[in-house]
Length: 214
Image 1: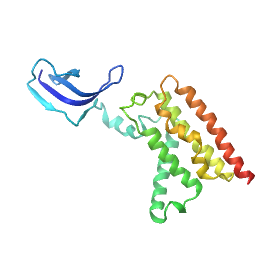
Image 2 (image 1 turned 180 degrees about the vertical axis):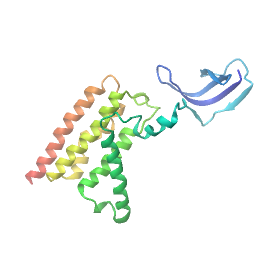
Image 3 (image 1 turned 90 degrees about the vertical axis):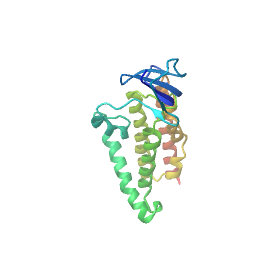
Image 4 (image 1 turned 60 degrees about the horizontal axis):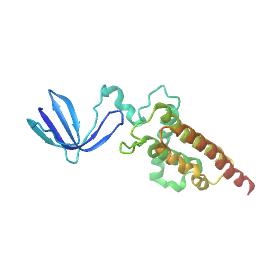
């Protein structure tokens, strides 16, 4: 063995998408030949201390794919890409206003835009390789998760026009459920996401009717 990287956190691409802590990665002729939890019996020619470091699969054609990382690997063929990019662009514009006059000066609709963009970043774009249910996410699951957030914004926009209190819209149980949606097991996410949509529609409608009744 030419080189051994020792005591490194290895993010694998094996069928279980394991993350191995304190791994030993063997390299020979410029190629990885082993990823083990214990040091090999054969002494390597060189040892690289990987303590505190992470070894992850490299990018291929990174000039093509690196730009999609901020959109969780989405590309132009996703129907909601334009809506997502427009939302994030609007957030950037509003943040400039907030710096000048403060967030309290924004309208309820603009405050909702900031909250929705925050949901995009925290509940959709952020991915945790150390969580089993978030290490890998299918295209369908990603599309449904994005649709949940955009649907929430659309429903809240309509409710605000009917006089709904924005803070009550933020406080509905379905909003918290969206925040936990990416941790739902892969074999149940479709049913869980459908229930979130149903609950969300009902809860937002209740807030809107309460505002109209006042």
